[in-house]
Length: 340
DNA sequence: AAGTCGTGGAC
DNA sequence: TGTCCAAGACT
Image (cartoon, rainbow, N blue to C red):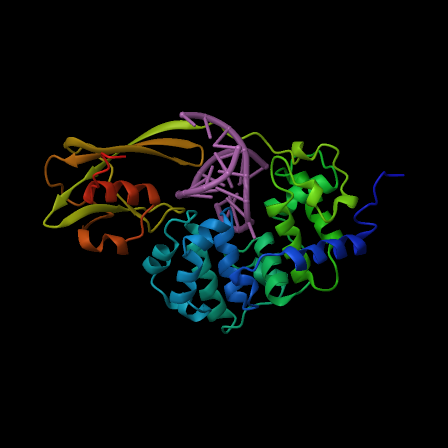
């Protein structure tokens, strides 16, 4: 006999305790005030690997919904606007995929949002988690979901000692998520499971004393769970870029790779002559620690392929990764911070 | 199927 | 200073 009731065998009571907590303590987010699948999808795409604070407090969600309020407007928007609205959130492929999805819905679904799991999974940028989120949050249809929060909650609940980011671990977590799913009010249940992980069953030391499902939790040492695969070591790299100004314009380079296409940044120095060092700093991207140096161009360079002269007063309209936006602002609009 | 893709806040 | 991480998906 287990010391505690099994959450799966006793799932009705488990679900009830969880949802009751959510109805008393759950937060009121903009995307919980609507069942519009487009609004739900936009919020879910923005929130992938991104904190609530970023999406809410920095205004990305509200600005996006104001500029592109529905599937049709997103499908027809210029990609530069889409990327500009996304600027600062990172993982810019999410924005491009979101627009592709809008175009597929307009072109192949006659503008009607699909309501089945296979149809949602076929859309670019929508994986298993996001499909489950749209199914349950927008349509209140029974579909499980596992994100980082849910994985942590389930790993502790079941005292799971397999790495949650391994294929085996993922398979088991999705089975548990499916087995625990209620038949009614999946919207509240999935919201509750995620919010429990976000606010109480947190990484590090969880707030077990406040947990509504503590009677079902098998974890003996919750702060040691979940297990994860070791990360790749951070590699230091250097990036030397050119600040070339000419007739009120500045030379920018547009990224062409599959993952970064469309974003603009300062062009690499290559073998062009440089003058004084204008700015230096660093940023981290995936497992690279980048030392970024901005050099003044010694002579006006010729724009190469994928490079354009951009009017300085219109720089804000060209989507740019955050480190370059910061560095460029520092060089073009120096602020006297000698008192700080 | 590991590797890749951003960012800023918490500790 | 470094480490971890946050509502993942794609290749």
